[in-house]
Amino acid sequence: QMQLVESGGGVVQPGRSLRLSCEASGFSFSTYGMQWIRQAPGKGLEWVAIITFGGSDQFYADSVKGRFTVSRDNPKNTLYLHMNSLRAEDTAVYYCAKDSVAGAPFYQYYGVDVWGQGTTVIVSS
Amino acid sequence: IVLTQTPLSLSVTPGQPAAISCKSSQSLQDRAAKTYLYWYLQKPGQSPQLLLQEVSNRFAGVPERFSGSGSGTDFTLRISRVEAEDVGIYYCMQSIQLPLTFGGGTKVEIK
Image (cartoon, rainbow over all chains, first blue to last red):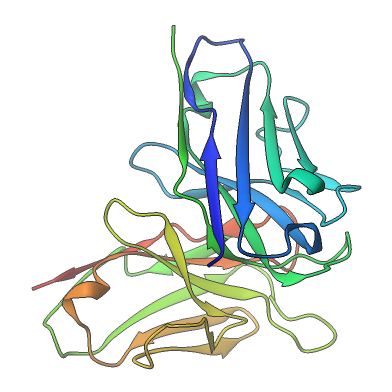
């Protein structure tokens, strides 16, 4: 079955960096755009970033633009989120999720249909 | 695009219906008449799960008691007969334009 497994979360000091990974299985990873979505403690869902199926286009929420970078390694079926200059407000559970439609072009966006279990990032001194 | 969900919370007797509204600040329908509105349920302690896509299409395995309706800027998720396993927080989401956004969530509890 389709599965996404995140890793790389942890406790990090403000201003430092962290890289999250998301390993995909059970579907053709290279044909789907992928997204990162986060949830601060006790809060709702916040979209973070999206990357097209080929990896050539990425888009970000204003709250992370210039600090976070989403990338993917299709042969390894792995999605990444590189987070720099972390702030306390980045504390959240980070979910990777798969686009619900395959092969979406860079100007077309879809909801997600499969979510990982999430990895927790805590930014604190 | 701002999505406003009402009510914030709902307490429902098992077997009774429930409805959640999601209102968008802009139309979610494109020129091809496709509407980019999704519904998710986050059960306690779990990741969110997709219920409905493009307003009313149930995702694989989603029970028929879940249905969606609406167009343009006004949408509704309905549960025909609430069951104990339906407790959690329901979110609507739009993907017609960036940034993708979620509604604030509606918490459903069982009486």
